[in-house]
Amino acid sequence: MNLTPKQRTVLLSLSTEWMTPTQIAGRLPEEWGNLSYVNQTLKDLMLVGLVQANPVMFGLFRLTTNGTNIKELELGEN
Image 1 (cartoon, rainbow, N blue to C red):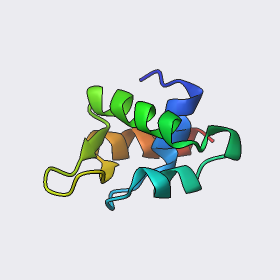
Image 2 (cartoon, rainbow, N blue to C red):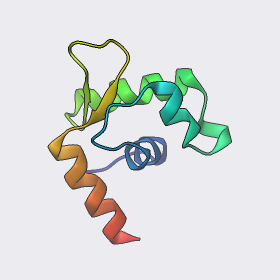
Image 3 (cartoon, rainbow, N blue to C red):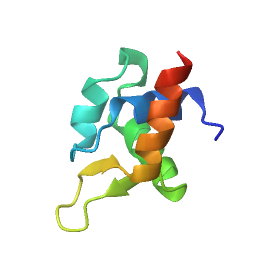
Image 4 (cartoon, rainbow, N blue to C red):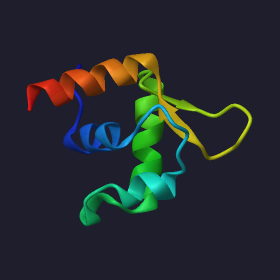
């Protein structure tokens, strides 16, 4: 899957644990760590099935199984 550099960075900062956009932004390089950037990138990653929003608690996100697989592939390439 072809991810943009920003999508790749957000994907690599996520885990299978529920996280808020603020927590995710805290793991990113400062130039990419603003909330509007994180929120838009999360939406983009949700559209392709790599990130899941918590259906009960608004504002929490985590990797899907596909997202975890892509993350492992990305980490293996480095």
